Length: 469
Ligand code: ARG
Image (cartoon, rainbow, N blue to C red; front, side, top):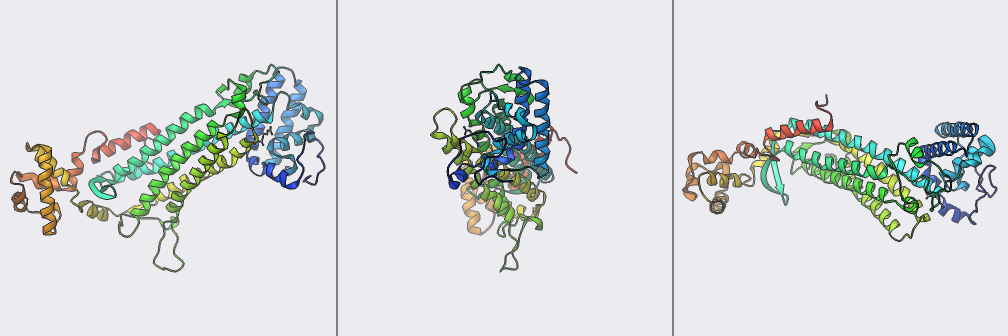
Protein backbone atom coordinates (compact mmCIF):
# COMPACT_ATOMS: atom_id res chain seq x y z
CA UNK A 1 0.00 0.00 0.00
CA UNK A 2 1.27 3.48 -0.76
CA UNK A 3 -0.46 6.79 -0.32
CA UNK A 4 2.33 8.98 -1.66
CA UNK A 5 -0.19 10.39 -4.14
CA UNK A 6 -1.45 12.75 -1.48
CA UNK A 7 -4.41 11.12 0.26
CA UNK A 8 -3.99 10.72 4.01
CA UNK A 9 -4.20 7.17 5.24
CA UNK A 10 -6.93 6.43 7.71
CA UNK A 11 -5.32 6.26 11.14
CA UNK A 12 -2.46 8.59 10.23
CA UNK A 13 -1.91 11.54 12.58
CA UNK A 14 -3.15 14.85 11.19
CA UNK A 15 0.35 16.29 10.84
CA UNK A 16 1.44 19.07 8.53
CA UNK A 17 2.80 17.63 5.30
CA UNK A 18 5.49 18.82 2.98
CA UNK A 19 4.51 20.26 -0.38
CA UNK A 20 6.38 18.61 -3.21
CA UNK A 21 7.55 15.12 -3.99
CA UNK A 22 11.22 16.09 -3.87
CA UNK A 23 10.77 17.70 -0.49
CA UNK A 24 9.08 14.58 0.83
CA UNK A 25 11.93 12.51 -0.52
CA UNK A 26 14.47 14.74 1.20
CA UNK A 27 12.53 14.53 4.45
CA UNK A 28 11.93 10.80 4.30
CA UNK A 29 13.91 8.50 6.54
CA UNK A 30 11.86 5.34 6.21
CA UNK A 31 14.29 3.79 3.74
CA UNK A 32 16.87 3.53 6.52
CA UNK A 33 15.10 3.93 9.86
CA UNK A 34 12.95 0.89 9.11
CA UNK A 35 15.68 -1.13 10.69
CA UNK A 36 14.80 0.47 14.02
CA UNK A 37 11.46 -1.32 14.06
CA UNK A 38 12.28 -3.71 16.91
CA UNK A 39 13.60 -0.88 19.04
CA UNK A 40 10.63 1.32 18.16
CA UNK A 41 8.25 -1.43 19.24
CA UNK A 42 10.18 -1.98 22.47
CA UNK A 43 10.01 1.76 23.13
CA UNK A 44 6.26 1.83 22.50
CA UNK A 45 5.64 -1.20 24.72
CA UNK A 46 7.58 0.43 27.54
CA UNK A 47 5.84 3.76 27.08
CA UNK A 48 2.42 2.06 27.04
CA UNK A 49 3.32 0.28 30.28
CA UNK A 50 4.25 3.66 31.78
CA UNK A 51 0.94 5.19 30.67
CA UNK A 52 -0.99 2.21 32.06
CA UNK A 53 0.77 2.52 35.39
CA UNK A 54 -0.54 6.08 35.83
CA UNK A 55 -3.93 5.11 34.39
CA UNK A 56 -3.75 7.24 31.28
CA UNK A 57 -4.46 3.91 29.64
CA UNK A 58 -6.99 1.50 31.12
CA UNK A 59 -5.97 -2.13 31.48
CA UNK A 60 -8.14 -2.96 28.49
CA UNK A 61 -6.59 -0.21 26.35
CA UNK A 62 -3.12 -1.27 27.39
CA UNK A 63 -3.87 -4.83 26.35
CA UNK A 64 -5.24 -3.71 22.98
CA UNK A 65 -2.09 -1.68 22.35
CA UNK A 66 0.15 -4.58 23.32
CA UNK A 67 -1.69 -6.92 20.98
CA UNK A 68 -1.61 -4.36 18.19
CA UNK A 69 2.14 -3.93 18.59
CA UNK A 70 2.63 -7.70 18.57
CA UNK A 71 0.66 -7.96 15.38
CA UNK A 72 2.70 -5.18 13.80
CA UNK A 73 5.86 -7.04 14.73
CA UNK A 74 4.73 -10.19 12.98
CA UNK A 75 3.50 -8.24 9.95
CA UNK A 76 6.93 -6.64 9.60
CA UNK A 77 8.76 -9.90 10.13
CA UNK A 78 6.60 -11.73 7.63
CA UNK A 79 6.97 -8.96 5.05
CA UNK A 80 3.26 -8.04 5.11
CA UNK A 81 3.49 -4.65 6.79
CA UNK A 82 1.94 -1.87 4.67
CA UNK A 83 4.90 0.51 4.62
CA UNK A 84 4.14 3.97 3.39
CA UNK A 85 6.71 6.54 2.31
CA UNK A 86 4.16 9.29 2.79
CA UNK A 87 4.27 8.58 6.53
CA UNK A 88 7.79 10.01 6.84
CA UNK A 89 9.47 7.55 9.13
CA UNK A 90 9.33 4.34 11.10
CA UNK A 91 7.55 5.98 14.04
CA UNK A 92 4.59 7.35 12.07
CA UNK A 93 4.33 4.14 10.06
CA UNK A 94 3.96 2.05 13.18
CA UNK A 95 1.65 4.48 14.96
CA UNK A 96 -0.62 4.74 11.94
CA UNK A 97 -0.80 1.00 11.56
CA UNK A 98 -1.63 0.61 15.25
CA UNK A 99 -4.65 2.86 14.91
CA UNK A 100 -5.69 1.05 11.76
CA UNK A 101 -5.53 -2.23 13.62
CA UNK A 102 -7.06 -1.37 17.00
CA UNK A 103 -9.03 1.81 16.34
CA UNK A 104 -9.11 4.96 18.47
CA UNK A 105 -7.17 3.44 21.37
CA UNK A 106 -4.13 3.54 19.10
CA UNK A 107 -4.36 7.34 19.12
CA UNK A 108 -3.58 7.37 22.84
CA UNK A 109 -0.14 5.80 22.59
CA UNK A 110 1.65 9.04 21.76
CA UNK A 111 0.38 10.75 24.95
CA UNK A 112 3.27 12.44 26.73
CA UNK A 113 5.75 11.33 24.13
CA UNK A 114 7.40 13.01 21.16
CA UNK A 115 9.22 11.52 18.25
CA UNK A 116 12.20 13.41 19.64
CA UNK A 117 12.53 11.34 22.79
CA UNK A 118 11.24 8.31 20.91
CA UNK A 119 13.93 8.33 18.24
CA UNK A 120 16.67 9.03 20.78
CA UNK A 121 15.45 6.01 22.75
CA UNK A 122 15.26 3.79 19.67
CA UNK A 123 18.75 4.67 18.57
CA UNK A 124 20.22 4.04 22.01
CA UNK A 125 18.60 0.62 22.08
CA UNK A 126 19.91 -0.14 18.62
CA UNK A 127 23.45 1.01 19.42
CA UNK A 128 23.43 -1.02 22.65
CA UNK A 129 22.52 -4.18 20.69
CA UNK A 130 25.23 -3.43 18.13
CA UNK A 131 27.86 -3.00 20.84
CA UNK A 132 26.96 -6.38 22.30
CA UNK A 133 27.15 -8.14 18.93
CA UNK A 134 30.44 -6.49 18.07
CA UNK A 135 31.98 -7.29 21.43
CA UNK A 136 31.34 -10.93 20.77
CA UNK A 137 32.73 -10.72 17.22
CA UNK A 138 35.92 -9.07 18.49
CA UNK A 139 36.41 -11.79 21.06
CA UNK A 140 35.97 -14.39 18.32
CA UNK A 141 38.81 -12.78 16.38
CA UNK A 142 40.88 -12.76 19.57
CA UNK A 143 40.20 -16.46 20.04
CA UNK A 144 41.56 -17.22 16.56
CA UNK A 145 44.64 -15.09 17.23
CA UNK A 146 45.30 -16.75 20.57
CA UNK A 147 45.38 -20.18 18.96
CA UNK A 148 47.77 -18.95 16.28
CA UNK A 149 49.94 -17.22 18.88
CA UNK A 150 50.18 -20.38 20.91
CA UNK A 151 51.25 -22.38 17.85
CA UNK A 152 53.83 -19.77 16.90
CA UNK A 153 55.04 -18.88 20.39
CA UNK A 154 58.60 -19.89 19.50
CA UNK A 155 58.69 -19.08 15.76
CA UNK A 156 61.26 -16.36 15.05
CA UNK A 157 60.41 -13.61 12.63
CA UNK A 158 61.95 -10.21 12.01
CA UNK A 159 60.63 -7.46 14.23
CA UNK A 160 60.55 -4.14 12.41
CA UNK A 161 60.94 -0.50 13.19
CA UNK A 162 60.67 1.82 10.18
CA UNK A 163 59.90 -1.43 8.31
CA UNK A 164 63.62 -2.19 8.62
CA UNK A 165 64.66 -5.39 10.34
CA UNK A 166 65.31 -4.34 13.91
CA UNK A 167 65.38 -7.26 16.34
CA UNK A 168 64.06 -10.79 16.11
CA UNK A 169 60.70 -11.47 17.73
CA UNK A 170 58.39 -14.43 17.76
CA UNK A 171 55.36 -14.53 15.52
CA UNK A 172 53.35 -15.41 18.63
CA UNK A 173 54.44 -12.15 20.24
CA UNK A 174 53.47 -10.19 17.15
CA UNK A 175 50.02 -11.78 17.10
CA UNK A 176 49.56 -11.07 20.79
CA UNK A 177 50.17 -7.40 20.04
CA UNK A 178 47.08 -7.58 17.83
CA UNK A 179 45.14 -9.21 20.68
CA UNK A 180 46.06 -6.24 22.89
CA UNK A 181 44.82 -3.67 20.37
CA UNK A 182 41.53 -5.50 20.11
CA UNK A 183 41.25 -5.76 23.87
CA UNK A 184 41.45 -1.99 24.19
CA UNK A 185 38.70 -1.76 21.54
CA UNK A 186 36.48 -3.99 23.66
CA UNK A 187 37.20 -1.95 26.77
CA UNK A 188 36.33 1.28 24.98
CA UNK A 189 33.06 -0.18 23.74
CA UNK A 190 32.17 -1.46 27.20
CA UNK A 191 32.80 2.00 28.61
CA UNK A 192 30.74 3.62 25.85
CA UNK A 193 27.89 1.19 26.59
CA UNK A 194 27.51 2.70 30.07
CA UNK A 195 26.62 6.08 28.54
CA UNK A 196 24.50 4.52 25.79
CA UNK A 197 22.40 2.57 28.26
CA UNK A 198 20.46 5.55 29.63
CA UNK A 199 16.81 6.19 28.81
CA UNK A 200 15.80 9.56 27.33
CA UNK A 201 12.13 8.54 27.19
CA UNK A 202 9.99 11.01 29.09
CA UNK A 203 11.93 14.02 27.85
CA UNK A 204 9.04 14.68 25.45
CA UNK A 205 9.71 17.12 22.64
CA UNK A 206 12.32 18.95 24.72
CA UNK A 207 10.83 20.27 27.97
CA UNK A 208 9.87 17.08 29.76
CA UNK A 209 6.54 15.38 30.32
CA UNK A 210 3.47 16.88 32.07
CA UNK A 211 2.35 13.35 32.97
CA UNK A 212 3.67 11.76 36.16
CA UNK A 213 5.12 8.83 34.23
CA UNK A 214 7.51 6.70 36.28
CA UNK A 215 10.50 7.11 34.00
CA UNK A 216 12.64 4.61 35.88
CA UNK A 217 9.96 1.98 35.58
CA UNK A 218 9.69 2.65 31.83
CA UNK A 219 13.48 2.57 31.48
CA UNK A 220 13.66 -0.80 33.23
CA UNK A 221 11.17 -2.25 30.71
CA UNK A 222 13.82 -1.60 28.06
CA UNK A 223 16.76 -2.79 30.11
CA UNK A 224 18.22 0.69 30.56
CA UNK A 225 20.23 1.12 33.73
CA UNK A 226 19.57 4.83 34.20
CA UNK A 227 17.49 7.78 32.92
CA UNK A 228 18.71 11.06 31.45
CA UNK A 229 18.69 14.03 33.84
CA UNK A 230 17.92 16.93 31.49
CA UNK A 231 15.18 16.77 28.90
CA UNK A 232 16.83 19.23 26.50
CA UNK A 233 20.09 17.35 26.57
CA UNK A 234 18.21 14.06 26.27
CA UNK A 235 16.59 14.83 22.91
CA UNK A 236 19.59 16.55 21.37
CA UNK A 237 22.43 14.37 22.59
CA UNK A 238 24.04 12.11 20.03
CA UNK A 239 27.39 11.86 21.84
CA UNK A 240 26.71 8.21 22.51
CA UNK A 241 26.50 7.55 18.77
CA UNK A 242 29.67 9.55 18.07
CA UNK A 243 31.50 7.68 20.80
CA UNK A 244 30.44 4.31 19.52
CA UNK A 245 31.35 5.22 15.95
CA UNK A 246 34.73 6.53 17.11
CA UNK A 247 35.40 3.32 19.05
CA UNK A 248 34.50 1.27 15.99
CA UNK A 249 36.55 3.49 13.71
CA UNK A 250 39.60 2.98 15.87
CA UNK A 251 38.87 -0.74 15.85
CA UNK A 252 38.73 -0.56 12.03
CA UNK A 253 42.03 1.31 12.00
CA UNK A 254 43.48 -1.57 14.02
CA UNK A 255 42.03 -4.15 11.64
CA UNK A 256 43.41 -2.11 8.76
CA UNK A 257 46.92 -2.17 10.22
CA UNK A 258 46.70 -5.90 10.81
CA UNK A 259 45.31 -6.46 7.32
CA UNK A 260 48.19 -4.44 5.89
CA UNK A 261 50.67 -6.68 7.69
CA UNK A 262 48.96 -9.75 6.32
CA UNK A 263 49.14 -8.29 2.81
CA UNK A 264 52.86 -7.68 3.30
CA UNK A 265 53.51 -11.11 4.80
CA UNK A 266 51.75 -12.78 1.89
CA UNK A 267 53.56 -10.73 -0.75
CA UNK A 268 56.29 -12.48 -2.69
CA UNK A 269 59.27 -10.53 -1.34
CA UNK A 270 58.22 -11.36 2.25
CA UNK A 271 56.80 -14.83 1.71
CA UNK A 272 56.03 -15.31 5.42
CA UNK A 273 52.53 -16.63 4.94
CA UNK A 274 50.00 -17.75 2.41
CA UNK A 275 46.32 -17.01 2.50
CA UNK A 276 43.59 -19.53 2.16
CA UNK A 277 42.19 -19.64 -1.39
CA UNK A 278 38.76 -18.79 0.01
CA UNK A 279 39.82 -15.23 0.82
CA UNK A 280 41.67 -14.51 -2.45
CA UNK A 281 40.77 -13.89 -6.04
CA UNK A 282 42.80 -14.27 -9.22
CA UNK A 283 43.72 -11.67 -11.78
CA UNK A 284 41.78 -11.49 -15.05
CA UNK A 285 45.03 -11.23 -17.02
CA UNK A 286 47.88 -12.63 -14.88
CA UNK A 287 47.28 -16.35 -14.44
CA UNK A 288 49.76 -16.72 -11.56
CA UNK A 289 48.09 -14.14 -9.29
CA UNK A 290 46.45 -14.81 -5.97
CA UNK A 291 45.29 -11.50 -4.62
CA UNK A 292 44.59 -10.78 -0.95
CA UNK A 293 41.27 -9.07 -1.64
CA UNK A 294 39.67 -9.55 1.75
CA UNK A 295 42.50 -7.99 3.81
CA UNK A 296 42.73 -5.20 1.24
CA UNK A 297 39.03 -4.49 1.54
CA UNK A 298 39.21 -4.45 5.32
CA UNK A 299 42.08 -1.98 5.04
CA UNK A 300 40.05 0.23 2.72
CA UNK A 301 36.89 0.07 4.79
CA UNK A 302 38.65 1.86 7.62
CA UNK A 303 38.47 4.92 5.35
CA UNK A 304 34.74 4.56 5.09
CA UNK A 305 34.52 4.39 8.89
CA UNK A 306 36.49 7.60 9.28
CA UNK A 307 33.96 9.13 6.87
CA UNK A 308 31.06 8.05 9.08
CA UNK A 309 32.70 9.49 12.17
CA UNK A 310 33.35 12.74 10.36
CA UNK A 311 29.75 12.93 9.13
CA UNK A 312 28.42 12.58 12.69
CA UNK A 313 30.74 15.16 14.19
CA UNK A 314 29.95 17.70 11.49
CA UNK A 315 26.23 16.96 11.80
CA UNK A 316 26.36 17.90 15.48
CA UNK A 317 28.68 20.84 15.55
CA UNK A 318 26.30 23.60 14.46
CA UNK A 319 23.18 22.52 16.30
CA UNK A 320 21.54 24.77 18.87
CA UNK A 321 19.56 23.02 21.61
CA UNK A 322 17.38 21.06 21.51
CA UNK A 323 16.22 18.64 18.80
CA UNK A 324 16.86 19.58 15.18
CA UNK A 325 16.05 17.58 12.10
CA UNK A 326 19.78 17.42 11.42
CA UNK A 327 19.70 14.51 13.84
CA UNK A 328 17.82 12.39 11.36
CA UNK A 329 21.14 12.22 9.52
CA UNK A 330 22.71 10.34 12.41
CA UNK A 331 21.31 6.97 11.42
CA UNK A 332 22.96 6.15 8.13
CA UNK A 333 26.52 6.70 9.39
CA UNK A 334 25.78 4.67 12.52
CA UNK A 335 24.15 1.82 10.58
CA UNK A 336 26.86 1.81 7.94
CA UNK A 337 29.58 1.87 10.57
CA UNK A 338 28.16 -1.10 12.42
CA UNK A 339 27.59 -3.09 9.25
CA UNK A 340 31.15 -2.34 8.13
CA UNK A 341 32.56 -3.36 11.50
CA UNK A 342 30.61 -6.60 11.62
CA UNK A 343 31.52 -7.58 8.06
CA UNK A 344 35.15 -6.72 8.61
CA UNK A 345 35.46 -8.62 11.88
CA UNK A 346 33.86 -11.71 10.36
CA UNK A 347 36.13 -11.41 7.32
CA UNK A 348 39.23 -10.87 9.42
CA UNK A 349 38.49 -13.92 11.57
CA UNK A 350 38.35 -16.04 8.41
CA UNK A 351 41.48 -14.51 6.97
CA UNK A 352 43.42 -15.11 10.19
CA UNK A 353 42.12 -18.64 10.70
CA UNK A 354 43.23 -19.59 7.17
CA UNK A 355 46.79 -18.21 7.37
CA UNK A 356 49.58 -20.74 6.77
CA UNK A 357 52.96 -19.54 7.95
CA UNK A 358 56.30 -20.40 6.37
CA UNK A 359 58.49 -20.68 9.46
CA UNK A 360 61.64 -21.23 7.41
CA UNK A 361 61.12 -18.06 5.40
CA UNK A 362 60.44 -16.05 8.54
CA UNK A 363 63.53 -17.46 10.22
CA UNK A 364 65.71 -16.69 7.20
CA UNK A 365 64.44 -13.14 7.10
CA UNK A 366 64.85 -12.76 10.87
CA UNK A 367 68.54 -13.55 10.67
CA UNK A 368 69.19 -11.02 7.91
CA UNK A 369 70.11 -7.39 8.49
CA UNK A 370 72.38 -8.07 11.49
CA UNK A 371 69.24 -8.34 13.58
CA UNK A 372 71.09 -9.60 16.67
CA UNK A 373 73.60 -6.74 16.79
CA UNK A 374 72.01 -5.38 19.97
CA UNK A 375 72.33 -8.80 21.58
CA UNK A 376 76.06 -8.75 20.88
CA UNK A 377 76.36 -5.35 22.54
CA UNK A 378 74.37 -6.69 25.51
CA UNK A 379 76.74 -9.67 25.76
CA UNK A 380 79.69 -7.26 25.92
CA UNK A 381 77.85 -5.35 28.66
CA UNK A 382 77.58 -8.60 30.60
CA UNK A 383 81.35 -8.87 30.31
CA UNK A 384 81.71 -5.48 31.98
CA UNK A 385 81.82 -3.03 29.07
CA UNK A 386 79.74 0.19 29.34
CA UNK A 387 76.84 0.01 26.87
CA UNK A 388 77.96 2.98 24.75
CA UNK A 389 81.41 1.44 24.23
CA UNK A 390 79.85 -1.91 23.37
CA UNK A 391 77.55 -0.15 20.90
CA UNK A 392 80.53 1.49 19.18
CA UNK A 393 82.43 -1.81 18.98
CA UNK A 394 79.48 -3.62 17.46
CA UNK A 395 78.98 -0.86 14.91
CA UNK A 396 82.57 -1.43 13.78
CA UNK A 397 81.92 -5.14 13.64
CA UNK A 398 78.81 -4.62 11.51
CA UNK A 399 80.87 -2.55 9.07
CA UNK A 400 83.46 -5.32 8.94
CA UNK A 401 80.79 -7.97 8.35
CA UNK A 402 79.35 -5.89 5.51
CA UNK A 403 82.80 -5.61 3.98
CA UNK A 404 83.19 -9.40 4.14
CA UNK A 405 79.68 -9.85 2.76
CA UNK A 406 78.61 -11.85 5.83
CA UNK A 407 75.92 -11.64 8.44
CA UNK A 408 77.04 -11.16 12.06
CA UNK A 409 76.34 -14.77 13.06
CA UNK A 410 78.50 -15.99 10.16
CA UNK A 411 81.64 -14.26 11.45
CA UNK A 412 84.24 -16.58 12.91
CA UNK A 413 85.59 -16.07 16.41
CA UNK A 414 88.83 -14.70 14.94
CA UNK A 415 87.00 -12.28 12.71
CA UNK A 416 85.07 -11.05 15.73
CA UNK A 417 88.16 -10.72 17.91
CA UNK A 418 90.06 -8.81 15.25
CA UNK A 419 87.54 -5.98 15.75
CA UNK A 420 86.44 -6.62 19.34
CA UNK A 421 89.46 -7.97 21.23
CA UNK A 422 87.43 -8.11 24.46
CA UNK A 423 85.02 -10.65 22.97
CA UNK A 424 84.66 -13.72 25.22
CA UNK A 425 84.40 -17.32 24.06
CA UNK A 426 80.61 -17.65 24.09
CA UNK A 427 79.94 -14.34 22.38
CA UNK A 428 78.87 -16.01 19.14
CA UNK A 429 76.09 -17.79 20.96
CA UNK A 430 74.48 -14.44 21.76
CA UNK A 431 74.14 -13.88 18.02
CA UNK A 432 71.68 -16.73 17.47
CA UNK A 433 67.98 -16.00 17.01
CA UNK A 434 67.04 -18.39 19.81
CA UNK A 435 69.36 -16.74 22.34
CA UNK A 436 68.20 -13.28 21.36
CA UNK A 437 64.55 -14.19 21.71
CA UNK A 438 64.94 -16.23 24.88
CA UNK A 439 66.83 -13.40 26.58
CA UNK A 440 63.80 -11.09 26.37
CA UNK A 441 62.05 -13.03 29.05
CA UNK A 442 60.88 -10.23 31.30
CA UNK A 443 57.36 -8.91 31.48
CA UNK A 444 56.06 -7.79 28.08
CA UNK A 445 58.92 -9.42 26.17
CA UNK A 446 59.02 -11.78 23.20
CA UNK A 447 60.53 -14.91 24.83
CA UNK A 448 58.44 -18.03 24.00
CA UNK A 449 57.67 -18.66 27.67
CA UNK A 450 56.37 -15.09 27.99
CA UNK A 451 54.21 -15.48 24.92
CA UNK A 452 52.74 -18.73 26.24
CA UNK A 453 52.01 -17.07 29.57
CA UNK A 454 50.42 -14.09 27.78
CA UNK A 455 48.17 -16.47 25.84
CA UNK A 456 47.12 -18.22 29.05
CA UNK A 457 46.36 -14.96 30.82
CA UNK A 458 44.41 -13.58 27.86
CA UNK A 459 42.38 -16.79 27.55
CA UNK A 460 41.44 -16.57 31.20
CA UNK A 461 40.54 -12.88 30.94
CA UNK A 462 38.41 -13.50 27.87
CA UNK A 463 36.64 -16.39 29.53
CA UNK A 464 37.72 -19.05 27.07
CA UNK A 465 40.39 -20.94 28.97
CA UNK A 466 40.84 -23.66 26.30
CA UNK A 467 42.02 -23.44 22.74
CA UNK A 468 39.34 -23.67 20.13
CA UNK A 469 39.21 -27.16 18.63
N1 ARG B 1 12.72 10.84 11.72
C1 ARG B 1 13.11 11.71 12.77
C2 ARG B 1 14.58 11.47 13.17
O1 ARG B 1 15.13 10.55 12.71
C3 ARG B 1 12.26 11.49 13.96
C4 ARG B 1 12.12 12.68 14.84
C5 ARG B 1 11.32 13.70 14.14
N2 ARG B 1 11.04 14.78 15.00
C6 ARG B 1 10.59 15.95 14.56
N3 ARG B 1 10.42 16.87 15.43
N4 ARG B 1 10.39 16.16 13.31
O2 ARG B 1 15.17 12.21 13.90
